[in-house]
Image 1 (tube, rainbow, N blue to C red):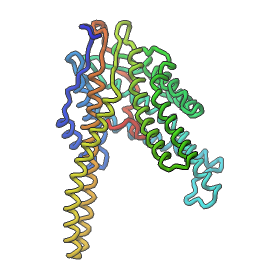
Image 2 (cartoon, rainbow, N blue to C red; image 1 turned 90 degrees about the vertical axis):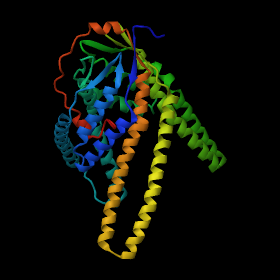
Image 3 (cartoon, one colour; image 1 turned 30 degrees about the horizontal axis):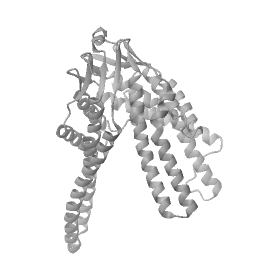
Length: 398
């Protein structure tokens, strides 16, 4: 029940403003051959952060594109050295890449090398995820008070690697244990000003959120089993499609309801609690409607563009001009890149921003009077500006 001591989230971003920002920054990224993407991501974050409002006060993102770019350069050098050392170790043990494997033994060696390299990168991926979250926390303010996160990236990387192996061995049955322990590790090291976050609860409580995953797996198994037993391709197809769709929806349901559980059992200091009430069906509607809108826009553009291109190509074929054909090919490539730019901007506007809006507006802070007792936190040191996350392509659209 809502009280006067609660703060309800609001989101004030608009589609038009974000679309214009996304188009401009993405075009600049293309023109600069990708270099501007650090500044582009920073500008989009500033817009989204400033659109999220609580009790009349907007969030503030203070990161810069330059520090992200410099962090990326450092991370690339470190990764190159790290991967080089890994390859030297593998070569020492007689393992090296074969350009074109021709025997079963060479194919097995190639597959083994791929998995070994992925396994070697796994700790760095988790390390990058923790550092990226720490950077965003350190560069986020609300009411002039900064958030923060303690160092602990390597501890997180080791734990996450161990829990990943545990999930694989348990065929996913211990996923709630891994999710809870890793989330608790990060939350218990997070701060708002001089007030500390704490994650309470039990990992076994997350199994309720997995019910649709179990149902999807059951439908998939029964459908495929029945189809195989009856030698029915229709049964195989129906069981496979229904089971797969149910699994996808079940995965979203798990993420949404595990988030609700985490926030319901999270505290800030002694008197501040949280409540998050995102709804799976609403998020599905956003994704479906947004996907349909984007698809319709792209179909219309491609239909008009296809007709225009067909007419141009007909004229070019009649003129038999190789220079003109080359120019048309170049223009076509540019238009293709611009189409990708448009897809990214439309996805941000019609899917990601509405989802953010839903999460923000269904979020409540309970015990706002205690916020007045929180003092500013000292600035974080040793924050690497998400360099490893950018180098490993972790972190999503913004």
